[in-house]
Image (cartoon, rainbow, N blue to C red):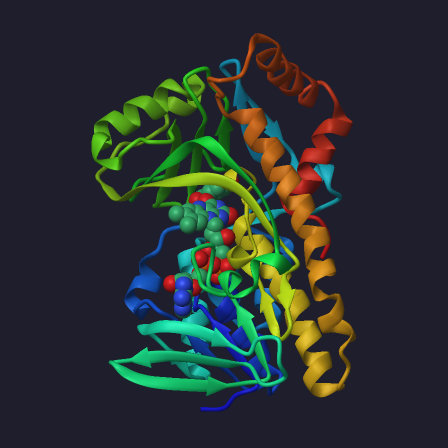
Length: 390
Ligand code: FAS
Ligand code: PHB
């Protein structure tokens, strides 16, 4: 098999890149090691920055997003038993966020790719990259036991944190930065109306909690749990009781219980691999970086990476210029590190860190007090939350 761009991974990054390249007339094949059903079953992010909404619109996959996405002008922060609203729109000169599940984004991208008739090879086994520092890189894999090879000009490593693309880069050529947090997020999805019309991030002495949503009928909740917590230890009843303990009274009273349709624990880490390129292999999305979900940046960073990588590949294939590809890693990392900082800051601000000493606990309290006593501090938080410019 031969193509111009081999894309490893059919998550949001790989599918969005495939969609943009296909619309530019650049041939591409996506190789995915899970089934389509598994890819579509994942419950993950829920908040899209305006930049990502604009990019999905440019890719021609934003019709349902336009109909069903919930535009939010503000977000709630709760601490000390009180709920404070951050007026994102007023503080950023009109910018907002859109609540629309990553699952829906993936569905829309899968449908668009099928409509274009572009190839996505699901359930590929033993995917391996070869000659990535040559002008003729190759991908080998097995489908249904049959050995296959895909020759290409460029490989886009969009296979997430646990994928093989980053690992194909020699360790000597890669520098990794990481912080693993001493807790995780226990998430629950329920078909009940949300507790509030905007998201509520809650700091509480028992631990962090988040009230989010997918629609006016479907809610997404999270509570901070110890790093080694098991999801089996949590009944739905126990989850909702703990969630209410961590929320201001008026929000807790509005939480509507119901049977969970999904319940899982996600670990929290900050991670960046530099550079995001080796030869003809380019990393994008979680393959190159991970943020704790507190700042709702993971999915949105995948989108800005794809913006930069798509533009660079267009220059390479259509204008025969290497400038974009040569500048891709530095350009993407400049935005990645700012989102890493904001996600790390939001996580430090809102979570309970049992290992922190008394001084560090006071620093967290002072950070919260300062945030709500300073218009400048609130504006800084707002401009990062809605998303820094691409
Ligand atoms: P993805 O991991 O989504 O996709 C990678 C794809 O590559 C997958 O389909 C995988 O099956 C495939 N793959 C892996 N190895 C392969 C191989 N060897 N060969 C071929 N294919 C391979 N972000 C937020 O903003 N908010 C959240 O609340 C949030 N919650 C999350 C919860 C969990 C459990 C996880 C893991 C992540 C969460 N994220 C959240 C971050 C998440 O949304 C990512 O940022 C987003 O999925 C990034 O998209 P991709 O880079 O496409 O990676
Ligand atoms: C979600 O709805 O899943 C969500 C929203 C905001 C976050 C993290 C997760 O910061």
